[in-house]
Length: 171
Image 1 (cartoon, rainbow, N blue to C red):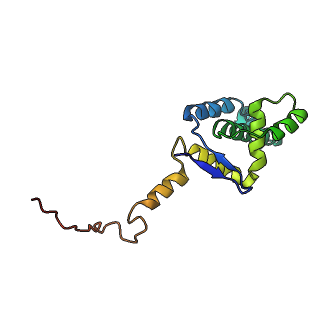
Image 2 (image 1 turned 90 degrees about the horizontal axis):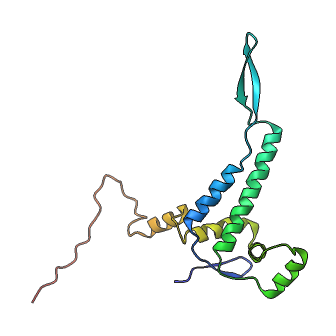
Image 3 (image 1 turned 180 degrees about the vertical axis):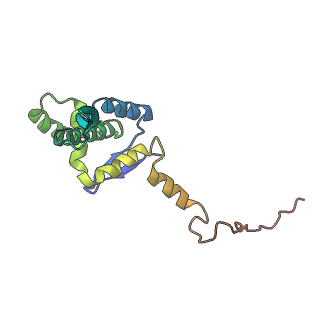
């Protein structure tokens, strides 16, 4: 079965599984780059001090916001490159190679995907790609709702009704 995602702009993207270990590795690599929380000296009395983290530092907050933005971009690019089988058309590639001569084919592919996906639907697209490989909250909820009786309003302490079917007679 071929999985597809049709964007609001009408482009149908062919999805493919993304290795879960590669995604975990990407997360680990980005955690290594997380800015360190600054430490300040706090007087505790009698001329003594102790060090305390200061996550409210404006410089740290700015660095953290920049890191989160860069990490989000890297994760999106990875899913757009690895999780979508489509390739950009030649017109797109030609135009963007002029503007970004150092860009790799994969970077141009990620740019192309971002040109056909609205920013507020990118999360849904990434969830759809992830669901090819691992369970997502949305996928679990959909599967749960598909079970017979999933929408029945019964008390959990009540027994589950069983329908009786006539026994088949053997000849």
